Image 1: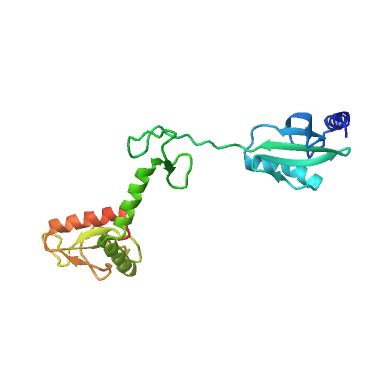
Image 2: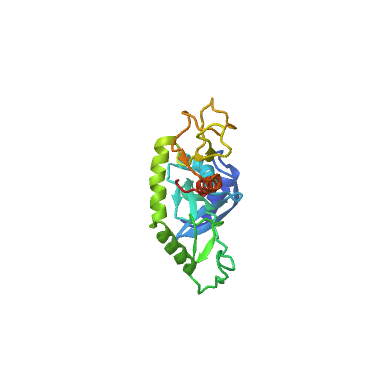
Length: 234
């Protein structure tokens, strides 16, 4: 097949452009592996899903499979026996490396090893490897501590009693008419329990824990509620 044959196929394509052909920025005759072909770039700057959608009618018409080598998405067809294709360049995501580590002043120079946190998205924090290692060591140490074991045990108890992983806590009265709350307990969610009534009734979930000092009771309530907000199980 000669270049003139491919050029004639291109002329025919431009004269009678089929309805299933998507908008193309430009057409050209080119050599591909020693053969002459006609190729065109998909118009616009579509993302991956939009490009595949635009090329789908070409695939359905030609019976050829959509080609994707990780860089180009290509739909092939023929005009007068000449191979033709419409292609779209897959967008390339670039990650901008910040100047310094997210948790220390270390400059992220080319010779400094660093990592992206989370799923590694472009907006994820970037840490130098020493900071990553320190965070990992701290996590391992804390999750092997007696505090974590106590949280897990409390989590199981509270889940059984309140049917929620992290109940809100409050100070309560176990004796009506007391000057100060003498206990703490999970917030009662019973519809008939007035939310402003601090008395512990039979409808209130366990455990109701007596605390001799209402000042210490207030402190414990703040600790438990802060723990829950932070995402701890108890």
